[in-house]
Structures are given as C-alpha cells and as structure tokens.
Image (cartoon, rainbow, N blue to C red; front, side):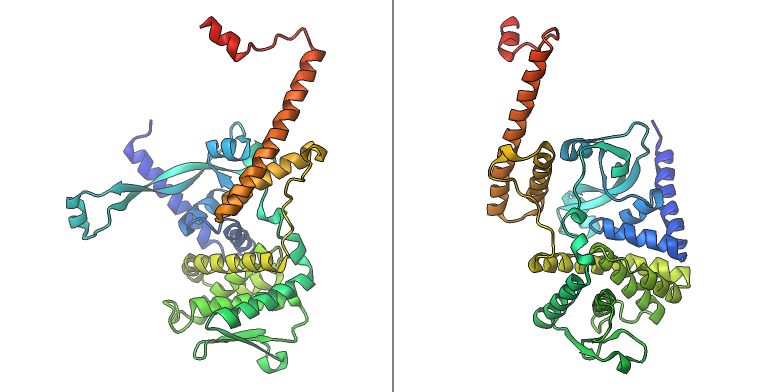
Length: 374
C-alpha cells in the first residue's frame, strides 16, 4: 500500500509528464497527434486531455475497467497498463467551512484522486460504435462539405450577431479570409476552389470571433498566439467531420507557434471553442441529412443476421444514452427490448440444439430443483 508521500509523488509525476509532452508540441507531427487526441476527447477537461495524451498519445476512447464490461461488453486485456485521469473529490461543507471559504455553496471540490482508465485498444470484445460509424465518411465528399459550409454560414448570419460575407480572393491580398472585431464581421474568399479549405477558413475566422472579439477575455493576445489558437480550432473541427487539413493547418500553426510558451498557453484556451464548433457542426450535419442513418431494428427481427442484430442492439443503446427527448428515449427502449428478446430466443435455441447434440454433457439444474434442495 503506497504511503501519502508516494501518492503525492505519483500525482506530481503525472502532471510533470503532461507538461513535458505539451512543451514538445512545436514539432508538427507531435502537435498533430495532440490535436487528434483533443478532437477525440473533446468532452474531457483540458487537464485530463493533457494527462491522457502524456501517457498514451494513441488513445482514442477510454473508460474504466467495469465500464468496459458493463457498457460495452468488453474486457481489459491482461497486463494492460492503466491511464490515470484526475477526478474531483467533492465534499459537503459545514457552516464553519462555508464561512472560512467565504461561500454559500453547499459542496466544494477539496482535492483530486487519480482514477485508472483504459483505451479501447487495450480491450477485447464486442465492437465499439463511434461517431465515425455514422457521420464521417459522407463529409469527405466536397459537395457535402459545401453544404455544411453554406449551412454554417447561414446559421451564423441568421442566429448569431455575426455577419458572414464573401469577397473575391484577389481582394484579400493572399489571405483566405479575416475577422473584423470592430464590425463583428467574418469575410471569406468566396471563389476559393477547394471547398474543404473554404470551410476550414470559416471555422478559423469563427474561432477568432469567439476567442478574440472585442468582448473576449483573450482579445489582447499577441498575433502569433491568436493565429495558433484559431487554426488549432479549425484543424480540430475539420478532423471531427473526417476531413484532414493537416497539410495546410499544421504548417500554418508551425509558422506562427515557434515559441513553446505560445503553444503551452494557447492550448489551454482552445478546448471550449473547439467543443462549441464540434457541437454546432454535428447539429448541422444532422439537419442536412449528411449523417449516415443509424440502423434501427427492422420490423421483422427474425430476418436480421446475428451481426446486424448485435449492431442494432449497440446502436439503440447509444441512442438511449445520447437522446434527451423523453419520448424518443422511451421508443428506443421499447425497440431495445424487442431486439434483446430476439437475441435471447436465438441464444436459447442454440443452447437447446447444443444440448440435444451433446447429451453426455450434464445440464445445470433448474432454479426450481435447486430451491427444493435448500
């Protein structure tokens, strides 16, 4: 059992290791891996993203030992080395503690504990569905990227206080677009021939509007700092929809972020805007019908193959977790019950057939027989 000093040293080592990894990100290949990690773990705190990346830069999906078993029907491989993430320790405050901390909050974070999680590559079992199974592939087509660009531009014009307009590239003096804080306007080179680059530019300028507008806390950051942040957000957003702009984005970032201090400081502030852009894009792709439809169970489940039946079961589980609509959640649960019953019927049928073919194998006693023997 480690003593307090050992635990304290372990925590310090985790944070120091994360710090060292971040400071090396001026190398474009390492920076690309970090931004890929950020895109995959955009729901995690910035601190935990750093910890995950420092310990396993290839990690894509992490969960606890029991969660892999219960939620995904997967088991952690023997000998797998855990990734440690920080979890807050929340305590109910006494009146005296509230007075001492000068707060009216009933609960407060009093520390952190480091919990073990494992990457999907460290586990075995049923396939794990991800957003890429439903969303990513169609958006690699330039026609769909153009649709998303137009939808995002319309959303900003109609539902925010931003104004997005287009001008010929020739008037931008070599730039692809710009954000004007004084008028809260985004201007894009409308005749850009690469539609993916055009969408990335809109993401870039939108990031500027959120991070460096007149009301932003970061509006006075140096130019190198601002450009590093905006392009990092754009790269993450494009990665999220399955379009790799690394040939452009990472060279752009490397040009601006020559100072390790710029990278280190900028990264702690881009996650919030990256999350916002990703959520907006995911919502718009769904409205546009660019997401691949998740397969719902067919009316006659008996016609589904075992593989498709399992995929339907996993898909419905994910839909139940993600939807906030009570009616939809109830509908998905009913469908999940039907699929579960069909799987159970097939399993029982297979077990019965196996028992008939292998009469020499002793079968387990029924619950009734067992109860009589108690």
